[in-house]
Image 1: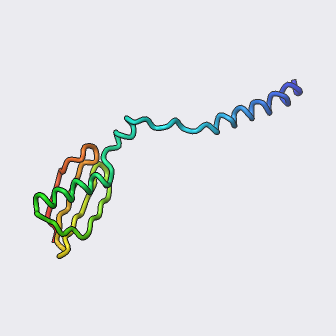
Image 2: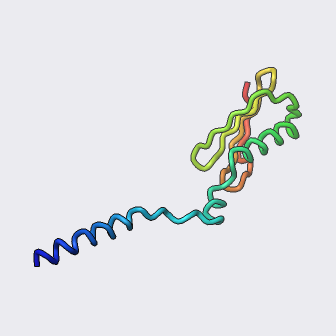
Image 3: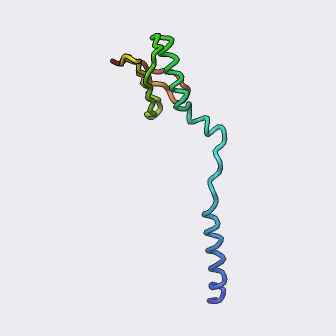
Amino acid sequence: MKAFTLIALPFLLVNGLAGCADSPPAADAEAVASRGISREDAITTATGDATATYRMTDVSHVTAMRQGEFWVVDVRGADGPGVEYGIAAADGAIRERRTVR
């Protein structure tokens, strides 16, 4: 019995360790799409709306930060004031906008 254990033990250890080396499956296109819009898309939406709605043609500074289910994008003009947007990360819709001084 001892001889069987000594022979079987290395085999079991090698197979067990080999199973740990497997890489996780690659993400499919649906999983990537379910994460929502990218930071760049949120910035494009916000700057486009700031230009169209507030005629802000002198954008000098843009920050974007993901907070939960929303992208918070702050678009500032060269003179300081700007617009802060809450953009849904799932579909890119503008859910909130407010002017900032």
